[in-house]
Length: 106
Image (cartoon, rainbow, N blue to C red; front, side, top):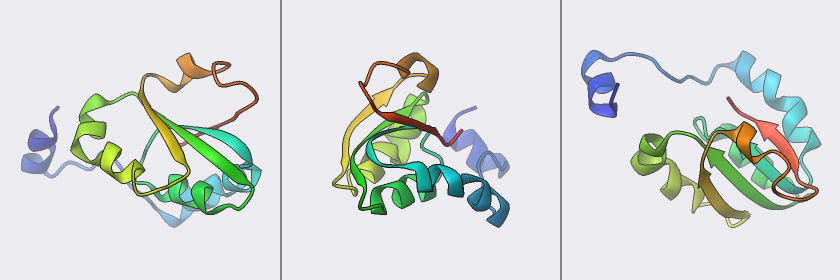
C-alpha cells in the first residue's frame, strides 16, 4: 500500500506509545561507539541514540525505500552522527559494520 493510499484510508501503520518508548529504553542505554539502527520508525529511537554522548556514529538501515523517500533520508540528515542510510533488511547488515552495536526499532 502506498503512502497516498494509507493517507486516503487513514490506516495506522506506525505508532509511538509510552509503552513502546519504555521497551526501547534498554536499547538506548546500550548505545555506544558505532551503532547500527535497524528500522527508522518515527525517529524517536534514532534521536535518543544520537543524543547519547557515548555514541560516535550511527548507521540507519531501513528496508522501505518508500519510507526513506517520503521522509526518512531527510530526517536522518538532521542528525550529525548519522553517517550512512542503507535501504536493506536490517538482518542482512548484521556483521557488516565491524564492532558496531546493532539495535532494532522494528
